[in-house]
Image 1 (cartoon, rainbow, N blue to C red):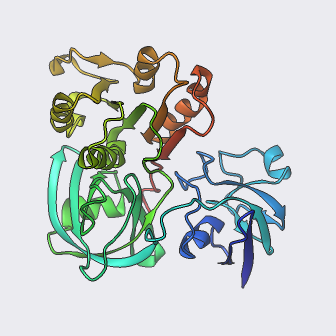
Image 2 (tube, rainbow, N blue to C red):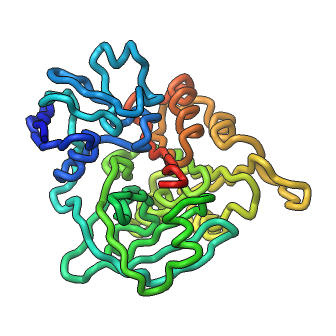
Length: 339
């Protein structure tokens, strides 16, 4: 059984089948709906129910309270339609050529960047360019209908090969395959480009970029795009990791910053060990940002990393003057290890 979903104010419609998240159905229909973690914690996919009813098979997700749900708020990444729906939710405006597609791809290179991160480069079919925006991600389509999401680390001007950074997760089906079984020329399938986390090039304000761990991947795509286009918009990039060994492409970013006056790079360690001999910034990465930028009123912020980091940024940065609508984020929610 399926239900019809209509969006207001745009008027877009799509079908959602039983037990399918509303967000997944919208993406399947080619709509660029706002979202990030897809785990129900970040609130990026929030919509207001104008008419109809939804349910949450696993209970209310952490990003919504019972009072908010009773008041008509819904998180589309977890909500299932019980009836036809009318939702107050605006699809993101992207260039017409940025279309969500399913494509085969072949592993071209497989490189260990550090003890727990692999750089995976996949080659796409040459028949039609894969157009994406710097910061977006793709889903790998796995057997049994499973998906794994990874941000594109390569820039849009290199559309035939996608670079992805895969962190090893204990018990993870896909990451185990990547680290232990996946060889060059292996065939995979992807869907994308996806996500509302991309560089807003029309803005001219200074930018603060924040990455936690492999949240560096979409930031790398953005930085390479800025390098390619010759932009001079000031960017201060903070990369938070536990120890220096986790700063898997720190030397590359340091080189970029040394060669370009508009880019400042600040790595931050949360748990350096004595043997690391680390003399740089310590603590949580968001604390370093606020120490350097006590007022965020004049900047745009792009943040990518684990949900706790994104959550504290969502909470604290507006209190330091960041205007509404100037925080763009990608919350890296890990899938269940057994999935």
